[in-house]
Image (cartoon, rainbow, N blue to C red; front, side, top):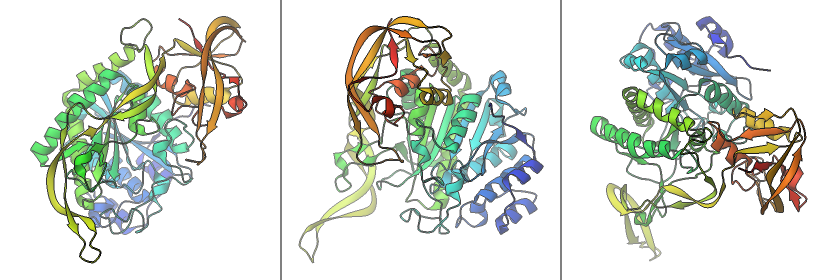
Length: 539
C-alpha cells in the first residue's frame, strides 16, 4: 500500500506530536518573538527533547506559510518524525517541488542522538530562514530539514552518555535507536522504520539534489572546529565527487575561515595520537554510512562533524555557520548544481558516454598524492619521574604537522558493470529491498531464454562476531557464461537508471556491503557449491 505524506496544520501538529510540559515549551509558545530553542533558553546547559522540537516547529509554522511540517515516518516507539519544508511561495508536495525548478537541499540531524548540536543548529536555521535574515535563500532553494531523525534515542537523555564530550551538562541522548541499532549503519539493509521513512519519503519522493548530514566527532584532538567529508565510496559518479571535493568544500572552507574565523578541514583522525606526523586518516568507504550511500544515488552530499571538545554553544554555532555557508553557496550556484546532478543521471542512460564499464567491489584506503598541513595539538615527549619511562603529554598549543592525508579509497577488486540483473521470483525479499531503495525493478510477463553470467559460489563465510544483529557474510567463487531459461514472473533490474550504481553494489555477490553481506541470500547459498540466484546479462 502506498503511504501518503499528509500536510500538518499547527493544530494537527499539536495533536500529532504532543505538547511538551516543560518550562521551555511554555517560554517558546508564550513569547511572541523571538522563538528560542531549549538550548538557548537554558543558556546552553540542556538540549531539546522531542516535545521541545515539535513545539518549536509548531510555533514557527503558525507564523508563516513559508514553513510546512510533515511526518516522513514514525520511529520504532511511535513518534512521528518531522520533516520541515521551507519554500517561498509555499511548496507542499514533492511534485510541486520538482515542477518549481529550484534546487532542493536536505539537512538531516540527530541520526546519533548524543550528537545534538546539529539538531539545535537546524532549529535556529529554520527560524532564521523562515522569519529572519536568511529568507532570501528561498528565492533559489527549497530547503528541507529533518532536525530529530533519531527521535527515540533523543529521549534517552543521561549525563553518562558521551562523557568525553564538552556539554551540555544536562546530558544527551544515545547513539542507537530504540532497537539498539545504529541508524547510520542502516542505509543498505534498511531494516529500521526510521531509515525506511527517510529513504522512501525524503530521498525517493522529494529527491533532494544536495544533502547535508550533521554529526559530532569523538575522535582525535585536533585544531579544527569542524571537519567534513564528501562521499568516500569511489563507485559514485566521479564528476559529482570531484565537484564536492575540489570545488564546493574548498569554497566553504575559505568562507568559514574568512568570514567566521573557524578552521575546518576534511574529516579524519591521527593514526598515532603520540606522533601526529605519521598521518591523518578518514573513516569508512562503505555505503552503510549515509554520505557514501547518497553518493551512490548520484546526489551531492556533505558530512559535517563538529568538534566534540568544543563547548556545546560553540559546537552549535560552528555547525550553524557551516550549514548556512553551504546553503548560501547552493543558492549562488543553484543552476550549476542542478545541472551537475541531472547530467550524472543522464550518464546512466543506455549508450551514454560516462557510464562505467567496471566498478569496484572491495577497496583500500590511500593517501592523497602530496603531503598536507594538518592542525593538531603539540605533543611533548618526557620522562615520567616516578617510573622513569617515556610518556607523552598533549598541550593546548595548536601546531601544524606536515603529513600524509589518507583521505581517499581505491578499488582493489573490480568487475564488469552489466546491462541488467535477472532475479528469480523466489528471491522476493531482495526484490522488495531494491524497491524500497527506489530502484526500478521489472517483472517479466513471459519466459526468457538468454545467455547470462552465473556466479558459482565455492565458499560461504559468515563473520564470527555479530554486528547490528547480523553475522555479515562474504562469498567467493567464479563466473561462467551459460544459456538459462528464466521463467515468467522473474525480475529484471536494468542498470541504465539513476540508481544503477546502487543496484550494482546491492546485487553483486562479492560486494563488501550489499545484500549478500546483510544475509539476504544466506538460505540460497549456504550449501556450496551452488549458483548464486542473481544472474548478469551479457552485452
